Image (cartoon, rainbow, N blue to C red; front, top):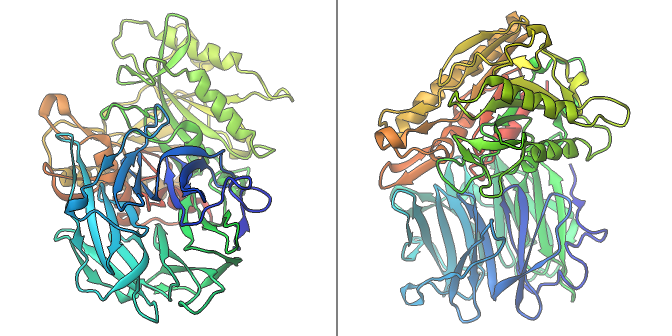
Length: 623
């Protein structure tokens, strides 16, 4: 799969001269978008966000200097090295869409450099690596959610190495943090080191480095692979051809030229939705930011269902999705996602778990546990559905479907079930058909094929029906008998479908996080095995729904295991050393094959940052 030009027709990310930069740009992914931050020839900083094809118009950044970026805990961080050597730490405000006043790192404590540093999120901490006087140093930024303390550790030298130079890079592979840099000698050999996280020391690793670097390196990772980008060998080589090499299965692949492109400074890498992006400034007087990318998968996560045959029953597809899909709240115990619904769909997720309430205006609004989403503005169910239908129509003839589980968030019992049922039914009935008259919703009570469902949403009705409506007239696959907080139960619908579910989500006893994750892993893996085995015996009409989400109960027991901790992992004074969450534990701990595993609903499915969990699940369908 070759590298192709992205952005504008000439491969630039901005119209000339808005993308000119005399130095290394910063590149990161944040909440389903690709972000670039760079300095123009006059020293002013600009940033822009985009997808895998285009960037939006640049926006002025409130500082000057050399930038690096990384996302941590759903927030985008920028470190700016000013001309004075001062280091400023910014955190993007996603609500107000701006960069508030930064924190200045203490120069007297050693936070000073004149070169581009490296920044990465690892074990819920930011790691900053920089070079000063031919020595390499690292420091960490930690936010402790237990007491809201924020701390930068003092810089420590990465000991045991010879003199270094240029621009360092960091990446994560197999749960370990690696740093790469260039030796300060004539050969400019790339040196590799791995962090002993428990002791905060770095050990030399000659097997995870590659080639030689003229002025620096950049790196990223995705699943089982690491990627290294650098310019062609040594100080005497002026061609500056860009190469990328992949590390997989314990060895480096060949050095792959990026479409013959050259750069003035080290190229930068980032992976978004299974596609690796390389951005660099051109090796000429203009120094325009240029952009090439290539896929890492044999299909697009935005249209992966297109390669599955029409006759396939939806119950026979492995479908990754999200739990409490709209809960992008700023309240930790309400939030379960960082990605918006459009970003979830672009990332390959095809099951949405929607919790709604009916307001006095008769409209449906999104909730989680009695708390409105996007309060005080509120979020309408209709807006979510419009985003889904817009996604279907993006690429011509629709190839995808989305399974919509709808649940009534109001469990007070004060409102008759018919009110919610009829509000949902009315919304569906009022949804405009396609131009050819085809309905956009499938409300059948039986399993349909993917061919029938392309371009449509499929209703999984978790809410109770209007009791006066005849069972044969009710809408959707009937999941109203759902047993809350149950690790293994089976529903037999009135229409003859068998639906087996795992939804153990509440842990009220005080458990160490490691034990909670181990318990939840047992329930999830058990249901995965059931789904894979059952398709061999009864492949036709059996559904499997498997929720990876869970949370401790902070109200009753004082447990601190919020959904992010369970999904991604946590490291704090409370839980001791870092504990991996469900997402990396399932990805590495369960043996997946090319078969059906049913619907898997996930919290923060794009995390940790190096995760390929979504594509890993999708790939089980590619047989």
